[in-house]
Amino acid sequence: MSGHSHWATIKRQKGAADAKRGQLFSKLSRAIIIAARLGGGDPEANLKLRYAIEKAREASMPKENIERAIKKGTGELEGETIEEATYEGYGPGGVAILVECTTDNRNRSSSEIRKIFERGGGKMGSQGSVAWMFERKGMIVVPAAAVDEDQLLEVALDAGADDLKRTGSNYEITCDPTRFQRVQEALKAKKIPITNAEITQVAKNPVDVDPETAHKVLKLMEALDEHDDVQNVYSSMNIREEILAEVAARG
Image 1 (cartoon, rainbow, N blue to C red):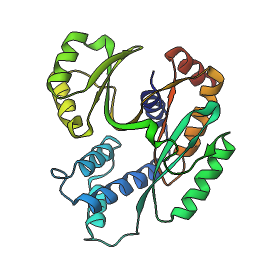
Image 2 (image 1 turned 30 degrees about the vertical axis):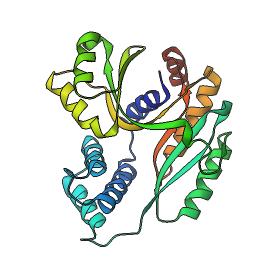
Image 3 (image 1 turned 60 degrees about the vertical axis):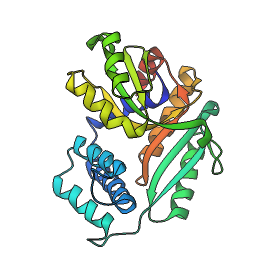
Image 4 (image 1 turned 180 degrees about the vertical axis):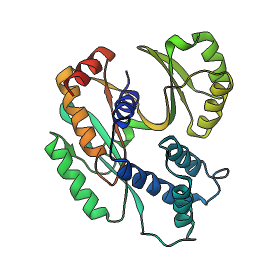
């Protein structure tokens, strides 16, 4: 299972029992604020905002919270000055890690993220050190048992997807971010179930890891993800489903 989708699976499983909903809403609000500030408050004309709102709705974020965040982004309401920051580094086993943040203090965030890397057996690198190893893609995961591959391929490609591949018990559909919503809607129209859908950073050359390294990298990614400023964590790690099950069993 590729790095982006196995991490999404783990986050989704954790989220079902995660009590830190206030922290989650804060992160989602920040994403909406920045999207609205950069591209305006109309989600129909602002892809980044539309995606941020969709993620907020999936998390059952109240409508008034979403609207308030949009108004803060467009300047209709006062709010803190927030900017985007990306930190890069390496985890155990030399696995590349990319961390996307929203912050009101770059120096503080940089220092704290660096410490998390070091505590987790990794090392934060300079800007550009690992970003070139990733590319932004729309990623949609469909359970293989729920649909015929040929049918799925036809629907996905007709909607503008770039690729479809089988990974364990799932199909992974990748597409350009601008076609993400179109591909999603095409699948929904055919009543094809979706396990996970996100705009993500996909490693160009995923790295296979053993169970011990996988466990250490996932612990580091979890620690990074729990930081208030962190929006997304990506890695170049490739992990087979049996190894993922073994790591998950450790807790």
